[in-house]
Amino acid sequence: MNSHLRALWRRIGYVSLLGLLLVALGTPSAQAQVLYGSIVGTVQDSSGGVIPGATVTITNRGTSQTREASTDENGRYTFSNVQAGFYDLAVTADGFSGYIEENIEVTVNRVRRSDVTLSVGSVSESVTVAASALALQTEKTDVNSELGSRAVTNMPLPNYRNYQSLINLVPGATPGRFQNSVGSSPGRSLRRTSMA
Image (cartoon, rainbow, N blue to C red; front, side, top):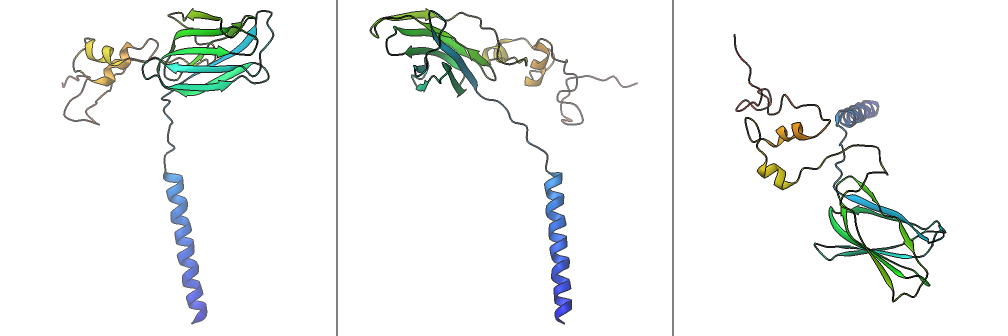
């Protein structure tokens, strides 16, 4: 009687283990969606020497929220997980004039590099720089595109107003042919098929 009970518990254990294994193998891996950008850079003096311990502050122009970081021993700073928007960057260090760069645009899934050169002077002096309108992506090799709400609202879209048809507006993207297909949405299909 005792051996029958042990055999039964073993079978239950094996079936449970097999069930857990099947669930683990059948679960699809989740693809992460990037919702933030980054600002990185190096702080150096006019001779090209790095400045460790400089205080770097970014301020969101829309929300007035600030974040602060210090440069490492190589003069580098990093702000990761930065919400998309426009930022002002301020750098201060002992024995150097302050530095302010305005209107740095941060976009989703992009690393924005902003290197800073400080000049020797008192902290009460500051240099203000207006950010350029177009910044090259130099930190990553991937290509991405961001379509804002204005583009989605105002662009004339062929056939149906479907967000999936915006794929066709992104340079280098494979044209979408099966958005809202009959198989996935029988009520409406973007690609019309003729019946013979």
